[in-house]
Length: 242
Image (cartoon, rainbow, N blue to C red):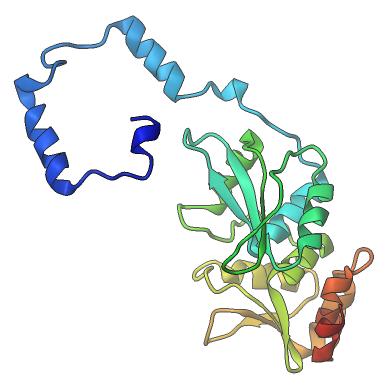
């Protein structure tokens, strides 16, 4: 233990030797048991009281934005105690992460860092009980599209800029990992007047040609960030200009 062992790993042979050395009645704790007081202390140390967990109340807009982020590349990382979670997100544009920080004024975030391998920028929030509650809806344990997902212009805007793209004369939204639940999004898009279908090749949602213009106009709730203007035009060179 301690600084002298940083970076060191025990061999499987040495682990086996330790196992044999302290097996059964050779273990100093053999035949003994913790007192009720000790058990209570261990329980409190390992399981933080739910009432003491950090929480935040999400506004209607924040919930919609969070839904869009989670439909894209956002992730809710569950804490070790299983009662809270934090939001993590990676993006090629650092401006997007600053926009996320601004969108959640009551949440604390780590400093933004850049991956030396992918060159993408990353961010993570503090752990919150409210995000832990959302984790139960979005993970089973794999990530799914919950039936409670909110489809609004704001949520779809964040979904599109995070995981949508133009492919020729069509628009596609990446839902590759939502193998058995992507149909929920198709149904909910239809309710708001956007026709779409799931492609057979990569399980991605394709906006029907007659709904593309309506979709692009519908999801704009404010100014489009300059780094994403290329998604609203057929000109592929647009991305190189921002």
